[in-house]
Image 1 (cartoon, one colour):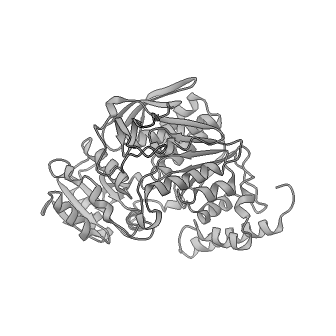
Image 2 (image 1 turned 135 degrees about the vertical axis):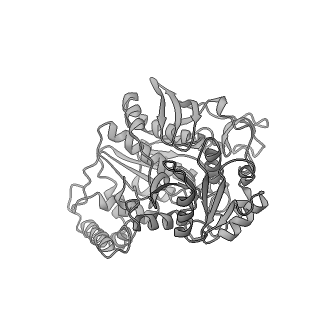
Image 3 (image 1 turned 180 degrees about the vertical axis):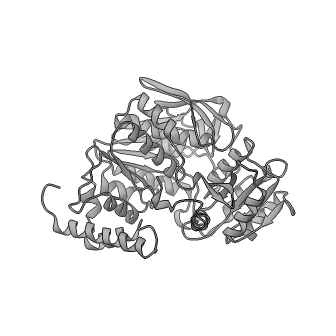
Length: 466
């Protein structure tokens, strides 16, 4: 952008004024509306701004884990000494991406950044790839999510395939070898794989929440010799012989103890790191760490920088974030679909999570209006173990409580508190001192809880964090 571009500059100015007004008038964090205004003035503004970062743009996409992986990657990039930016607020549709780029640009449309790391909604990934032409595209997984919006998981995988196809010839796709649908997207100009290779982490079979494992090459049934989370693991197709690609960057050891203690070891070309501790939980987060490390290697980070970044990492907004309410701590965990809820539930049950668990279910547009997926989660595991009390909240608290009753839970152990403040009060009353009460929340439920906590002074607004 060496030439003056009055229209682009006017779009940037319009976006910045909108963001300032939105926050000043307490209309929100200015994480989406500035993008709407700017794109109305100049529909190509994001495409133009994308040329600014000195080293390029990294796009992180997939159904689950985008925010955590992006936060991990930004932490590693900072440890490598790069100036880094991104959409930390989690607004990951095209208008949110545009707003994030505008927030980090000056009035000439220049960003003083080495890298811009953008988490992108899986259904927007192809459009984003065409506009920003990323140097690196990280594709995490394809799970069933928001059936009213994204439909079946194969359609999600197809959209992710369109994103890979939209990459420039110089780009690299960093792909999850453990997810068959993602591993099959290896027709990128360059593909680099990450995955888990620790048979001790095998959960012993596909969970109820997993979709039918179909070979993406021939449509035959896949056979799994190990399953780490969801439908992710080690597999092969007896019909055509296709099998899991060998990952270049591997998690060779995974140990979870509680909700903020993940011990793992990474290995890859030229070395590795570990064992090290990351304040996350579960094999799904081990995969997110591997994805971030694989992308960082493609960015040019060395193993020492990756290790330092991982050791300095702190959880992102709503992803194992600890907040305060009534002199007690609550841990917010996003669980927006069957795979995510199942993984978080298993993490809660893997250690001593404390005496009380919160669950909140909403059916907003951002959650998915179809809540039938709760019947695919193995809540039966809570019946014989886990926390002593379960607090159920959200707009669809009654339906979630019904599901839990079918799973074998009943009053007085099961308590329905629809409003966020009611549920938080109940959690605070029953939580052990110094032990954050885990709460698994769908997206808009998490926003509502976070808003209540911010109002009570127990956390910063999400646009002020990170």
